[in-house]
Image (cartoon, rainbow, N blue to C red; front, top):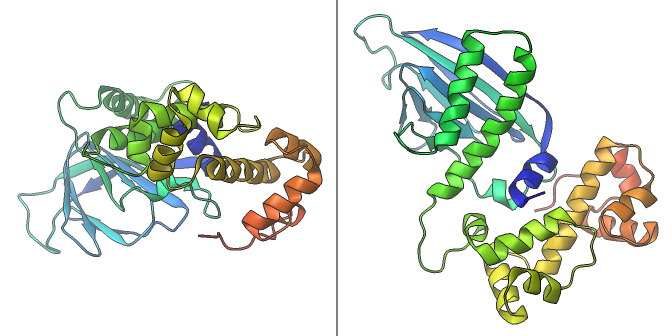
Amino acid sequence: MDVLSDVITVMRTGEPRSARVRRVSPWRQRLRPTPGTAAFEVVLAGTYWLIPAEGDPVALGTGDVLLLPHGGHYELADSVQEGADGAGPLTTVVLCGAYELDADRGHPLLDELPDVVHLPARLGRHPRLRAVVDLLGAELESPGPGTNAVVSALLETLLLYVLRAWLEDQPVCAGPTGWAAALADPVIRTALDAIHHDPARPWTVQELATCSGASRAAFARRFTALVGRPPLTYLTWWRLTTAARLLRGSDAPLSVVAAQVGYSSEYAFANAFRREFTIAPGRYRNGKRLPRQV
């Protein structure tokens, strides 16, 4: 599995919530997504405004996609000025909803997203994202047999395309750092994909460098600069993040979970898990989780 797909698979919990909403001016709505919830809106028809608690209002129009990945307080309104008179009743149609993310165990790729991800509908930009938006709009306007399954699958696809579009839009400059730069770097992306494809493999820095086509020293420096952790530190962190998902989502014995994420013994796995989470894996599985470690 490639790194972006794997991150979403592990971080996402539950099913995305969505609704097709028709708003007629004048209207104003408070939006307060909570941490662990990424709210989204797709403008199917009309125009309106996103008004953050701080900063400038954001104009939204037909075809725009909006993602609020970190919670926060916002207002949505047909006009920036409350009580402003318009030219008459105007209708806005949106697909709105939320994705549930693992509030205990965020991934730095998602943590680096801005508070507001706004992808305007521009001709020729992100055609695959536009295609998903069009399909969602059509399916919701004219439901048919299997609509629930179709919409659910399209919502999963929408999140991936939103993240891909945001990553593609990040400016390329000299000496960039962060996950957008890491995924744009073919050497580092190859290594990340290798780790995510087979986290249980006993990787060495040399093996990761070789599969990425780089020298060991140059690879290690570049990986650490972009990802923010040395290669094997990231590998260990991802193994334990994957283990946490397995503990939550299955009844597999600890020895099986340990083997799936690359630990030769349950004892070694339990020690590593406790160092990372400050709690034993058995207690974590039983729901006695401590606050996320930063």
